[in-house]
Length: 180
Image (cartoon, rainbow, N blue to C red; front, side, top):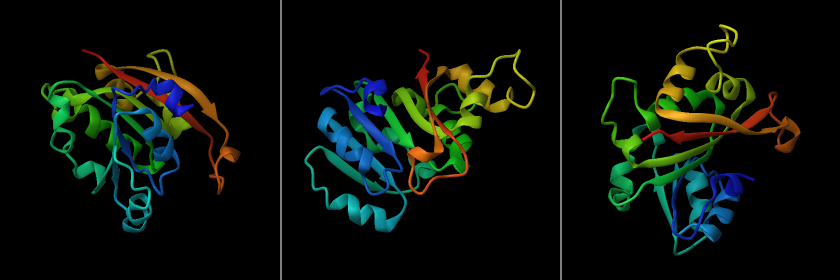
């Protein structure tokens, strides 16, 4: 579903945030021209290297300390797609890192980004797509930041039992299509 919703083609460069041992990565490389996997965990990086694929570049780094324009010089000529099944506790910082703050008009990461497809906690997904008519618990800074720079939508709800081990919360696949 992530690949289908991301509409990945053989012309696309995809940055995958937190690929872990590469379950989604293995599928992404089949469809994309190039996949750049940014992973912090050293053991996961070792597993990713076992994939040994020509169109896979592995970056061992914290995404929050990664300048996307530096790891993807090809993005100067076109934008990249971001795909991630990210740790839920750092969803907001990752979105802020990818899009930049509202007053950050020339954010390097946002300038190389086309579409962002994220698997997030359902509650966070509902905050991302909230409207001014939503409850004050849902509508807030994350809503404003996300919607200022992107058109946001929930693509699919994903029950907690779809994961192993099952988390305590349900998830959702969200799309943040960067506004020009």
